[in-house]
Length: 320
Length: 303
Image 1 (cartoon, chains in turn green, orange):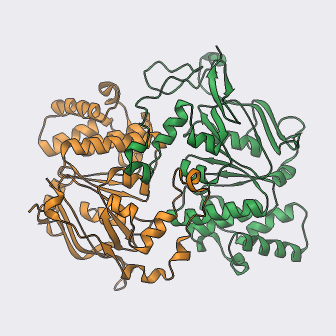
Image 2 (image 1 turned 90 degrees about the vertical axis):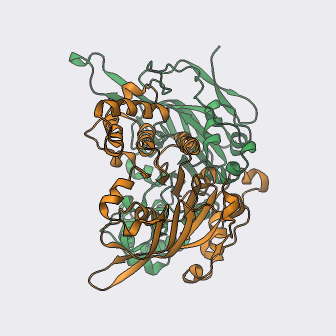
Image 3 (image 1 turned 180 degrees about the vertical axis):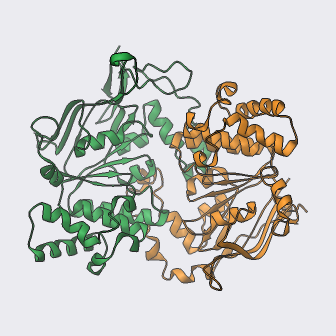
């Protein structure tokens, strides 16, 4: 069996919180990511789902090298991608790229599409003008734009077209892994469908591996091969899309799925499991004492394990 | 025969572009909301759903202006109402909740005081009395520890709690009509589900009619009895929610529904390519020429 493309092993990210007493006593750390491990195979789409603050974006930033992990290993083709012995930014850029949520905020308004797309190529040693032009042309066609549009600026495009440019920019260096951070949630419904179709086509055509971060579970179900459900820094359930959506096991996963406003479910309320009125107590978590349901993010959770419940389907349980 | 609570007749809106030029935003929109009914307006950005609600609230500012039509609220044309009268209605008989509660709440005043203001302004209560009512209102929207929370400033609350405060404010005077403009778009899914259920239950209990505006068809389906689909300043289709989702008649509605990944459809039918709305609609400019408005029996729709 070949080694997985990306391997994340016991990743921890903690943020120091300022405050506390004199001389830094009582200084606290916010545990954003608590020991998550997963693998991403070639050509696979793995989605991380969870609500704001669950650590999904921090995990992605660590993989991109934008956030130094506090503990743990991230390996790309067996080679460390973070920590000591990590490759420089330039090499990492060829392995992992990112598509952002808001394409308008992530494109430089003063650069034409051509300039935006040519910059990474030049930085990576491609200097022949004809080759740069050729690759930009091919990439624009790949994402459904025309080469003539290369001379235009971001404000001249619609939201959907801008997201196509964002995708083109992520793909221009031919990375193997693309991190998609809420790639369609800023887009209108009809445009969303076009971008989802495009992402799936490109994945097949260029055999890309996607790591998608999303809270929109209907998009996740449509696009993913495997799904990780995160809750307050931990993976609480993982499995193939079929296991997660057809047999969700962890109470949090069930709650997430039950909460999706889906027209079919809304019109046939019998078909939908009832919303959990209050979040059931999660194993291995200490809760803040004010009666709210938010776990205490300043203390590390007690030991718990992901238990295999069949296939590649795992769910978090307390250690007995 | 019951008279509709809100009767919008051929509403036309323009945005003026300088001295004589103007661009139409609403090209003759008509729909009715019966007392106690939840009506959804769905459409993409720029379709005119939000400006419709602002027109009802009388909150249109230049360069937006009404260029024709009527907005009848309990038989009274809101467009002809003096500003003073409109102010008396707004917040009292017609209330609104917005997408981003942080920008809609006053950051310098406690939430209890902001809710209490409603009772002082519209019901002539004393501040002391009003603040007690505010705590009660917070309890009604299921804010835990309402007496303690009433002393909080908006920044001390989470997004979901802030939206509950907005709902408490909006429903403080038991309005006849609640306008909700994308009230849950900024919230996490589980919080969204709770807030939607809250709106649904509170409005049903008080007999408050709802004009619910959203781009999310799932949200609309879970809360509204009837839906109007807007495209480019026109209502292109209107029907009972179930009929609309099960048998969309207008090609734009069909495109919109097909463009949506449906939960569970992948396990049933395998992964199917989402409908690209532009590939089934030949000419977008002709979309608004046809429309389907389901005939409605006004007598039978209300008890």
